[in-house]
Image 1 (tube, rainbow, N blue to C red):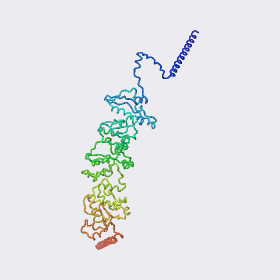
Image 2: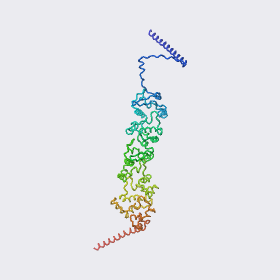
Image 3: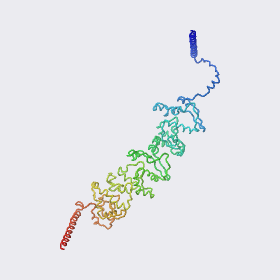
Image 4: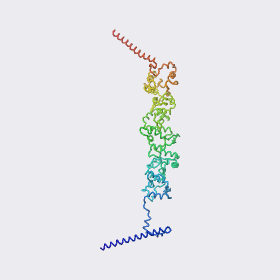
Amino acid sequence: MHTRHRLYGLLLLLAVAGLLALAGAGSLRAESAAAQVAGPSSVAALPPVVALPAALGAAQTQPPAAHPPTDAACRSCHGNSTAVVVFPSGEELPVAVDLAAFDASVHGVSSAAETGAPVGCNGCHPPATYQFPHPPVAEPDLRAYMLTRSENCVRCHEPHLTAHPGPEWSGGYDPAASESGISVVCTDCHGDHEVQPAEVWQQPAATTVCAACHADAGVDLTDPNQLALHVQFGLFGQRQVTTDFCMGCHGPPGQTLTFPNGDEISITIDGEALHASVHGIGNNWQQLECTDCHENYNYPHPPLEAASAREYTIEKTELCARCHQTQQEGHMDGVHAEALAEGNLDAATCVDCHGAHDTPVPDQPRSRIVETCRNCHSTVFDDYAVSVHGTALLTEENPDVPTCIECHGVHRINDPTTALFRNRSPELCASCHADREMMTHYDISIDVFETYVDDFHGTTVNIFQSNDPNTPTNKAVCYDCHGIHAIMAVDDPDAGIKENLLVTCQQCHPDATANFSDSWTGHHRPSLRDNPLMFLVTIFYAIVIPSTVAFLGFLVGTDVYRKMRGR
């Protein structure tokens, strides 16, 4: 019972204490309100300074625990600060940031439309490593600090090829391979807090940054307009060595290469011609990249070994053999490779005939074949162009007339001045002129080869070819009478065979008269239409001679029989 009374008493005491506390709080609020109503002229007296215990004061002087900064915290310090970071080298770096420029950059407020939110300070300076207060810098100088901080960029951006020396993570090549030996990193070009969109870097106004750096490093390319062209052609848009990366340097016009002997060549590549070539988009195998031909040809390029432009062309021709081995073997057996081996640097190589980067289909149109050979053999082309073959090809793209390669071959081109070529030349002409279907279309005799072989000239040449084709003969072959390249129509009044037959014969038979040339029946076998008298005489002899031989044989046989019976 007494215990219960004690509990009730304690509860009553607590309730009274609570009421007194509420009353005191209300009195304080009333005094505070009264002071506010009194206005600014009423100044409340400051409370007296109270000395703190020594232990408590010591606790308050310790630095606060480090905590992650927010963008607002970063901006409040770095937006209007005169502080600097001093490196052991003595260099100083102001910590102030132009907030307006930062907000206008691709990482600031302007990027919110594309990314949904600005990158902000913490996007590049992660709270895990950027605590407040900041730890002291560990780099010995400003350049080392910039190299280290630039590596933050690759956390979001896959590095692109830069064509500059730099660390491996930056997409650059070994600085030791450059003349300056200076590493170039992201912030050198893009800046740190004022990063601009990629489109801006395609303008000459932006590439003045590049020009200034090049001038300091001793790089010749300092024209902002030319630098802008390289950016526009995609030099910095690739992440591996592709054709597009190469075109970043070789696409802009006016690029040249100078050799030790002073030769200068253009190294600008027409991108449209490259893609339209046989190695480009229409390639049946696959579109070739620059590195398919120029293997291990990274940037910077190795020093030139060729002393002249011509030596360089010959040197690079060897690249073709990796894919075109059969053609290369044929070329090595031909007169061009033989001339090169003898020291004639003007002899044709693959590139001279097919081109380097704008390689077209070599026989489309067919006239391209003779136009290609014309580059070296212009005099021969002039003769061919006025011939019956050349006129038909160059004006009509006639598919039947021979071009250079039908007579001389494509890659395995033999010497046409040898006895072997001369003795076999009638077979070359026969490949077309003995083709019944082809010659019928042009009303030309298909017996040209057989009638030639049947006469004295052809029989002699055929004997030489059968026994030893390398033995020279002075007997006439086709081109002795018809010409080599300037082959005219047989009825041409100026150079045709029919109108000038005696003159043609007199080249080998100077004493020949009109009777000599009139006795030739041409390449037509005798018929009722061509040489009817000879045709009839031929038939007469074809009947009489066998009949006579048979009759005489009969007489001899009967005489022998009679004598044997008489014994």
